[in-house]
Length: 84
Image (cartoon, rainbow, N blue to C red; front, side):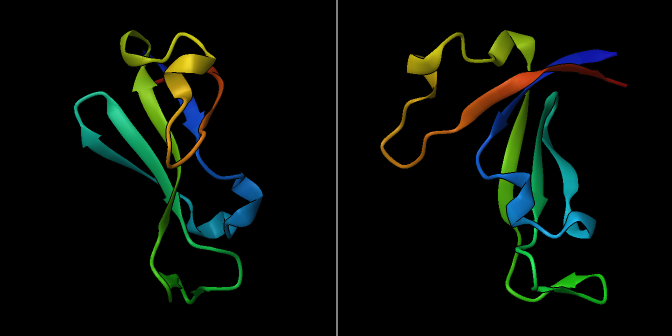
């Protein structure tokens, strides 16, 4: 099992629950993407998917609030968990 931290970019309530997908972008780094509510029809997103969260290995996780600050967005560290 690998240990990850989750950095949320958007509230999961913004997305259609059936549209959320986890994609591995490079070894050990994953993202969760989804389609905005109301735009996911017949298994397809009509407007394109958006980033909901990043999953990073513990070694690459931010250590505090200052590590998360950015001009463009303010993601939130929501917790640590284990994945197979």
